Image (tube, rainbow, N blue to C red; front, side, top):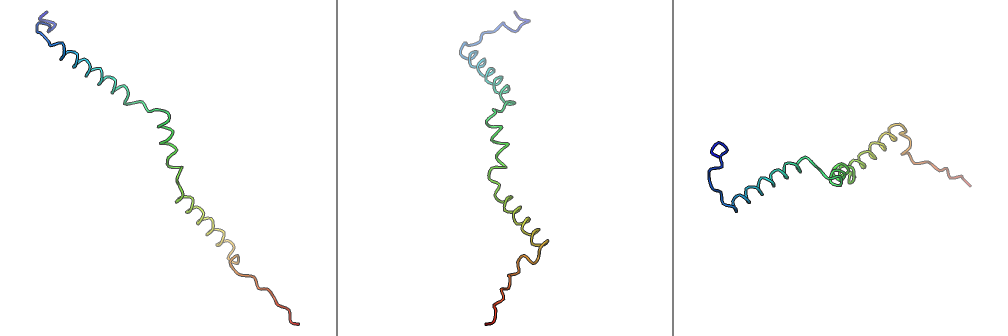
Length: 84
């Protein structure tokens, strides 16, 4: 028994606490690597849900390209009034 280290007395309550603590640590380490599918999906989709700044920027760039290609698009048309 001395070679195994079992030659001393351990309180049953302390033994139960230490075993529960070791079990909790083992379970926590097992759960650290796992992410639920719902949480993973929400984290992946989050940057694209409320991207209104990016959409506004893209719209401004598209309008700028259209105006640069067709500069006369902003000119107001002249309507000739006939002389009577």
